[in-house]
Image 1 (spheres, helix red, strand yellow):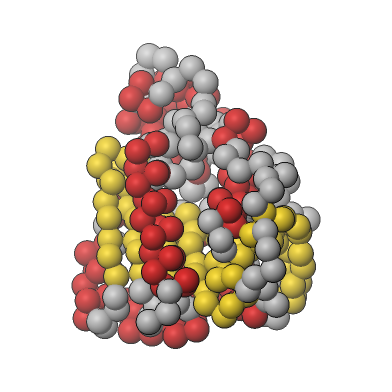
Image 2 (cartoon, one colour):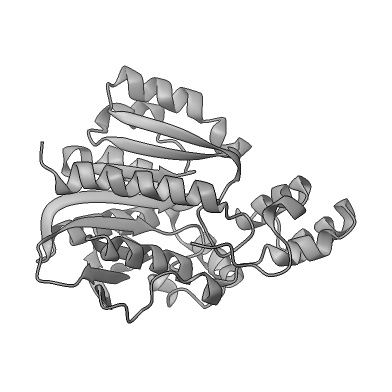
Length: 300
């Protein structure tokens, strides 16, 4: 995986612009405000802000036509969700299976090309991967993150999580699944990964949240799956939840490991913007694949 945004690298972007981008990505300010504040905070701030916008076409790592995989869009029933019906991107490895299953949960903007690429990466590694589009009840990911973020904010958030939970159950029960289920997610999807772990109990076999909100402390004892938790160093909003979350995991005897990646920003795995940190993204991904290998491909 390579950093892809033209012009500026992560080390050339002022931390204050990264902080503003984090506010923008989480819907606290709109695009115009983000650009204006970035321009005001430092010389060259506007160029820095513009460089942070995703470059999805250049970020693809696994081609749609890669012979190791077969991809298709599928629909599944989602009782209790936003519309009762969901759409997702299902990618299977070449061969007849069965395969261990992994649910891939997007950020707070719907099923964008980066998340689809993550699903293809997992399929190339031997997993049946489903990446639901939480925006399906509103017509699906609209082709850009700004509109996607606005659409996701309009959904009933509790029902949106149910749509992801139903995706986990759908892919686990799929004819190509061997019944072993993992979940991974990024940002909003990381927090939803933690939540799904509390909901599924021993129906889940491995969870890998990337820089996601902690599960509610009172719900942590319901987690039965081992967790691999990835944190960015410069991510105050998520990291302030970490001590209580880890204390609750230890108290509930949940098997888990957590890693903080030095010098990284929230979103460091996403290789479509300069927040991407190649070394940390690769290390975290290697750890993720090894974790899934241990818990989904190897019994015991």
